[in-house]
View 1 (cartoon, rainbow, N blue to C red):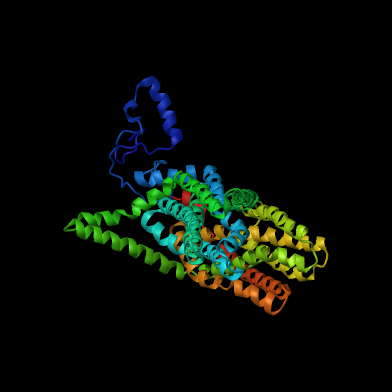
View 2: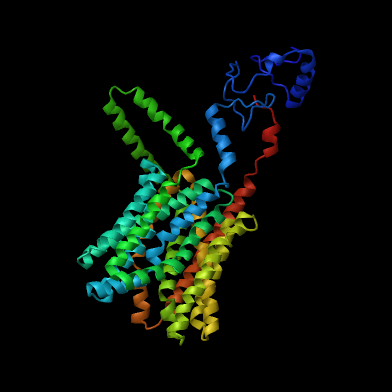
Length: 512
């Protein structure tokens, strides 16, 4: 047929030939009826979904189903462009980190209000940190059942309610349940869901987006300690807790503004089509509902099994454990350690402000090196933990004020980079589908181990009488993680050399 493809009445010629023919037909009136608007429905004898990546090879026409086309369009128009999500996550993290940054105020207030010693007063504060670190234990399965945003809102409500209920606590047991368990678990759910949402919206610039989000923790250190101190002096400890909970209620309003990206929603809808077909074939509504519940639970269990079979989850668990011990212990003992070295109390307290600045630089700036392609992510992790271990090992040998400050600044810098890259690598190696469940597995492994932080510090400071040996152990653990990530980097490069697809050929080669 001249000027027309013979397959089902479609014009399968190249776009250049079509444009030339259109120009000719404008003067002659030939074949004008074949230039139909794209919104008109067309029927064709060609199969609607050809085994071609991207577009069918016949004249460049996209023969994929409308659902696949919509998913591809969403993938190309939304990923790495929704920076408002990172800004909202920054605001959420600023409020989420407030209780951790104000742990000293809370502990002193508990001792004075409840008239208890340091051991009992430390329980609610310690429980907050432990439950934050293993918040994915509940948020992963819940997000599989109710999606990400409702779980995020529920975590915000739980965190704020725990603080408000603590204002009415009659004893330390009540306070441990409300402030430690409820508030800590809510914060763990919030930070886990924020990391999942950031990973959904960003791929290439995932490091920068996570850095912006985690920068909220540093900003919180400059805002909430002064705010709580003012509230405590004005309204007392109980009144400050009540108003603090009211401030954290703003997390609920901000969390409602989040939305899952359209490509994730489409993927979830497509994955549930099989369940819907099963429901239509069921004999009754009750059987259909039961089938849906079983399918959801089976999906969670299947994802957990898949994550446990992934070797990288164990690398990520070890990395997270070493990070939590280094981060929590360093920032909780840096003032006491500096005073042991002869630094005055005023200068030792100023270390917290200085290290917060380098912590912010590590969270935001260093991950951009991987986003811009200067370093591979696994290579940056290996280099980061090597330098972290080096700085931690050097702390006991620092005798002057300035050398100790320089070593502390280095530790904070590389700890900031490590927390951002942990989230990035979780998404890279587990994928978005298993990311929430991956945090569940991470919390299950790390939760019990993180309860040993207090005895770990007490053994070195109280039994051995010095922090020096403790920092030697922490630095050695950093070197261990460095060696692990060097091996991961070598394995990744070896796999990349073995798997080199012919991208150009896959687009130019005709498909049959």
